[in-house]
Length: 78
Image (cartoon, rainbow, N blue to C red; front, side, top):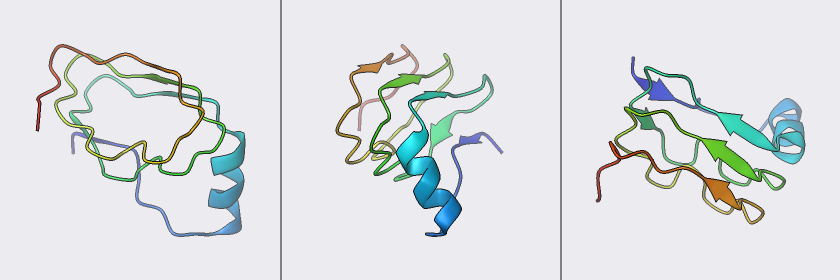
């Protein structure tokens, strides 16, 4: 469907993931990362986006430790 990330509900598994994930690599073929898909991933430090991503919105909202993210040339400005 062209979307990266997933919809979440606050389950204990999701809360645990948000605390242990340090790096996210989005697969080729994704074109958009849903808003808040990775919001509050408190230990996320690095995101790798493939060429072809056109929109990320607020996908990484409040990821305070995020220090490295590549922005592909295909990304469109809002």
